[in-house]
Length: 303
View 1 (cartoon, rainbow, N blue to C red):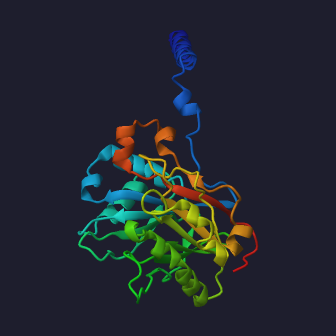
View 2: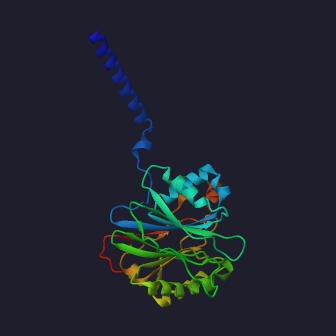
View 3: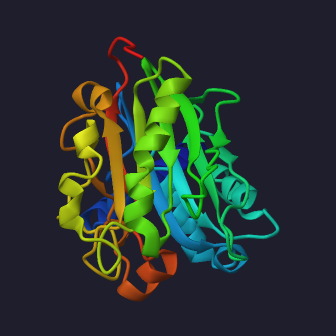
């Protein structure tokens, strides 16, 4: 009896080893052995991103593969500003959070603005963030009080901490036809945020509509730069999935640029190339690519 059991165990072992060799020889183990392509933060850095998801509402939510792709994208970053949330029921942001947290990995949370805009087609901003790498500083989120009605959608401002890096984000989606005026008035928003307290690490980001027929991108050389702010998404960077325009931008104070910002890290996340998507499906996800940059979190807090 013992001999028969030993022979059976031997045969089973041979079958398992043969199967494993076949799988290895034919490349079937690659999907398990190769790490997933990722830009997620490692160690002493944090990645901050912004993404205009293009009419993000109930219709897009019903597209399972699109939502799966959006979840993958957000999970590459520590903080992501999501723009163009258009949903009168205001259920898209919590729905998206549930989808993000249904995937294995760090838990995410979000903060969201009210619906903004002068027309009936209103939009909300939301910051989604990795709760293991980033702390939202409670009660710091607010919509800029635009008393002169300069902005179609008032900037949404919030502060976070990652290690020794405290920072404030200014999310903005300019009105295309008024992009120059709105961008020019960002200096007032920067001044307002700086005047609130000691925090000097301030970053404005996302869809500035700063190219194409809306704006002469060559004018960016002086806009805000004369006031000591740095543009880190250059004119050569294609932030759109359909064109070669650079609508999406990231601007920061000189304090951040010269300290926590990791030089030349600002770029776009080409999810179409990374995930092997065709053009049709890429455009279903969005007409924009996410932009992002990397920052050090292990430097002394300079506030």
